[in-house]
Length: 401
Picture 1 (cartoon, rainbow, N blue to C red):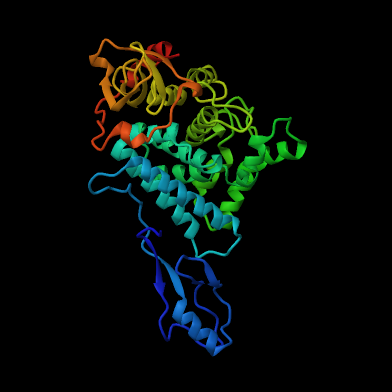
Picture 2 (picture 1 turned 60 degrees about the horizontal axis):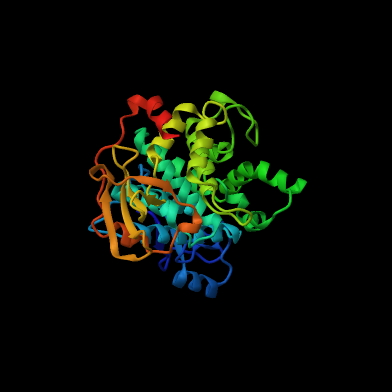
């Protein structure tokens, strides 16, 4: 779907002239190019056909896109799945090697970005739940969506300007574009990488940026972030081995989301890395591979028990975290199975700040059971108004890991 500042207008009789160049790219109703701008129309029948089925793209007055605002209640999990479908369709368009109307691909990524922002504003905890619970889509789709949600949480916390945030989210959604055709095979490969595979991995940020540029993306920040999202502060990253201040702060945020998502998502050759080990790995690399302050903020925003993770409670219940609180050790949870193995008729919600029940441990995959995440949050999902104060980062972090 095109954003409101970019539209397709129907060609009318008289817009085209026989034996004259087309005044614009003539598109189908989805923005695919039927006839490139400047191509001569040498047949009256062809001219009439274009007037019947053709459109042309018009970019309206440029302005900063704003997060989508939802009227009434929505199901964030269904919306998340729908955005995954939209992202998959956008990737397929790029893979088709078609010519597109000017800035069509750019606008489609921007539309996804502001929809993600709207959902985070609507219910950030539910979106984090989607990040940890959604398994319906393959890694090349699920992974960038996870990065984008996690990135938006940090950008919002840091109060980054909206114009920059849209560019960063577009980069999050497209940063691994060049890996999409190869990702499934690499995930299933158990042996060591071949030299050609290592070369592809090392160059994929640059290839992704070039693919976007060729598709009409002219946002310099977006392209720069795609090319830098695997760089590390100590120079051990790729493709250029950039160090310290040569790496944009926004790219450092993308790197955190990318690495965390990759660790907690199961792959063909391994299961998901345990949450505690994932957070510990990020924490131990702060100031080396990853920006120290941003790493601490990132882990704090996730919390000790992020929404969407399965936990075993001290009373023996199997539960799912459904909300963060101002106490990182006492989240909101929804119990789904009792200690005796019987399921609750409906999820039993608890705010552990107001209970003597505690989280015993985070469950691994062997203890998880399939459940519709929407039932865990319910229609009237409780939203948290307060977050942990960032003024005491270090003491909090010492208690977190």
